[in-house]
Length: 397
Ligand SMILES: C[S@@+](CC[C@H](N)C(=O)[O-])C[C@H]1O[C@@H](n2cnc3c(N)ncnc32)[C@H](O)[C@@H]1O
Image 1 (cartoon, rainbow, N blue to C red):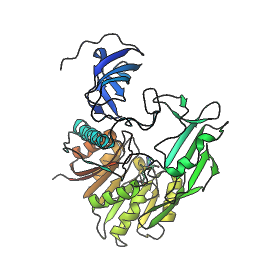
Image 2 (tube, rainbow, N blue to C red):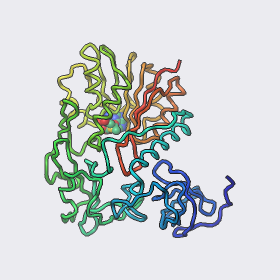
Image 3 (cartoon, protein in one colour):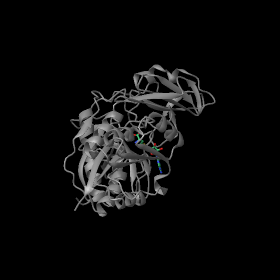
């Protein structure tokens, strides 16, 4: 397609156009006045009017303000704040929940194709038991405005919106009624619900109510972790990730495995049960309290060794059968991926919450002689553009 030459464009300009595909971040691609635009609240093929919200040298941002011809997949957003100039938390409330998964599958596929030259074909994104995609968030952060009112931030904004109820929050978190309290003098309120349904409310770093430690149960094992420390947000995510990692990695009795970015050892625990006492699992994690909580929760598994270290600075052992890595959103990066490949495991299982960072890391592994042989994608964050990819890599020759 020949694109029109660029014409001057400014914030608040309104342009009528047809939206292109949805990309990473949940934006539709469009070309107002010859510019590349990332558009919120749209769907591919829709005839809409957008308002320009930001102008950068290489692209602009825009938001849909009127839909002239809707996509068949457009629905009424359940939350009144999920709209143009509304809350920044959800990208896809205006999209049918099943179609959200189709879009996420296409984004993951396109990321791997573009960043790593890997074609995985059409990806089926698995729901985590959600029917309506609501009330699954077991960890929430509210920002407090100048009047002491808890609210949500707008998209790419420091402005606090008076969102009185977040429809993604778990029922226990909603029952804590954070928005009914005067939080004057506080910057943010953090609320978590553990797997027993116990809710902890923190104002900045002070515990206001509920237990200091959250109890999280997966299969027959329970962790007692700092309630503000890392744990999977969707209540079904931890068990599903474990099931996929074990299914893809197929750890065997007597094997040596490494769990990088291990948190409190969610994955290490079940790898350890699979490799048994004749095998071993090394869990590498840099957040001290996660290491402490993990050591306590896995104390009965003598084959697990926790290492309190930065993965980037850690010396990989000479022999390893399998490596699992579950890095933060930015991915593991070039040096760590080179070290993973250099350790020559028979299997690498990569758990990723950002498909683009994952695809960049996948490119390093494939360059180093590994092939992506299987992938699962979980809809662990309904109503948002986020997803969890779990992929298996094996030596290609
Ligand atoms: C996505 S979480 C995964 C945790 C765990 N696999 C789970 O599912 O509960 C990423 C973890 O990596 C840790 N982390 C981040 N950067 C790290 C680094 N450079 N070295 C070691 N651990 C790191 C974080 O503290 C966090 O616990």
